[in-house]
Structures are given as structure tokens and as C-alpha cells.
Amino acid sequence: MQGIPASPGIAIGKVYLKQETTVEIEEKEIPEEKVEEEIIRLHKALDRAKNDINGIKNFISQELGREQAEIFRPHIMLLEDPELVPAIENKIREEQVNAEAAVNQILGRYAAIFAGMEDEYMRGRTCDINDVGKRIISSLNGHEEMTEDLPGKVIIIARDLSPSDTARLEYARCLAIIVETGFL
Image (tube, rainbow, N blue to C red):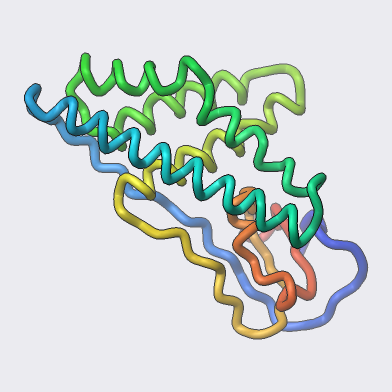
């Protein structure tokens, strides 16, 4: 196995293979008279997403420190972006698509722009955009965020761990974390 260690030292133990979570997005056309209801549903999901992220940020701040909690700052900044919400609303109004499809398409564009940037830090924000998008769409679909239930003390191996994934881990049960392994 080859990977990038996300925690220092040497660990021996059982391996827990973290599966990537996928969010189902069903694009639906909505009737014109339901457009405003869809926008209200979008705003409720955005509020839940922001509250969730602030809750995680506060938890991480208390458990690990303020500096570590700042990893969620770009998530909140994205949700407060003055161009994001109007772009999603316009997509819903103009194309009469459901909020899930509008969020996926608009944030997909944001992610593509950031992924194409020369600056490595800015390219890295693509992960944040995708994480926020999954959170909003999960909220729209009525899915609750759950804490990762680890089967005892384990070494976690994952292709990628988003900031939200990392925040949900039970650190007392993590012997080590390895990210971007070559065998997945």
C-alpha cells in the first residue's frame, strides 16, 4: 500500500476502509407555480448547511483548537458568497429545475473554475466546494449527517477525506489515517 499519512508515527492495527459517500441527484423539472416553493426549500437547506458547518466549527474549536476549526472558514465563506445564492435561484427560475440540480450545476461550475486555477491553494478549495455541495444536496434530500461509526481502534484508509468527513471521525478510535492510497 502506498499513501499519504494524515497522522504522525507508526500504527499497527485493523484497517477500516472508508468508502466514498455519494449523493444522489435526481434532476426534475418543476412547474412554474412551484418555483418559489423550491427556492424556499433551497434557503432552508442553505440555512441547515450553514448551521451544521458552524456547529462542526465550534466543536472542532473546543476539541482541537481555533486554528484547526478555521478549516471550515472557506465553507462558510462559500455559503455567504453574494453571487452563489442568486445564481442558484436564477437556475431554478429560468430552467425550472429542482434545487438539487441547480446546486449541483452551479457548484459544479465553481469547482471547475477553482480546479483550473494555477495557485495550488485555490485549486485545493475545490474540495471545499464539493463538500459544501454534498452537504446542501444531502439537506435537500432530507439526509441527516451521521458520525462515522468505527469498529474499534482502527487505521483509516480513504481515497479522500473531506473536512466534514474528518470532523465526523471518532479520534479516540483512530490509530492512524492514510489518504490517497494507491490501491483503492
